[in-house]
Length: 117
Image (tube, rainbow, N blue to C red; front, side):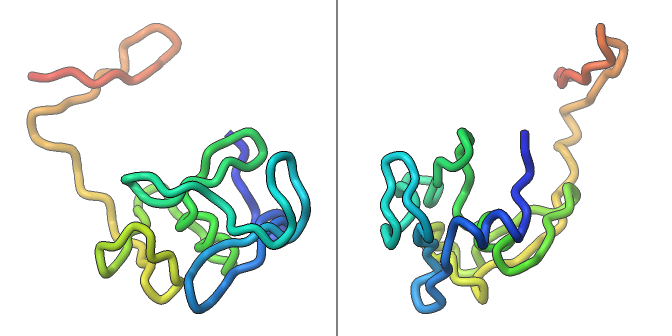
């Protein structure tokens, strides 16, 4: 998967500080300049961009020049998945897997697959 950069996100989107929404800066297939980007889903807003579905809050984080380390996850402080204002987003350390789940690495092509013990 291609990782979006701050430059590419800022090239395609503007950020509305009051609502936390991204709007299209340029016309794209099915989108017009000035349209609010994304579709509301039960898990939050999803934006289809560059052939990939992205969570809006992740693109907002990247738009502000911040990085997301794989050991952290991005959460909404107030619990509202539609509230993507930068002040409402926070990185938190990922919790370890439950004790009932283990990973084995002796699979073909070194793929790791979970199994229950």
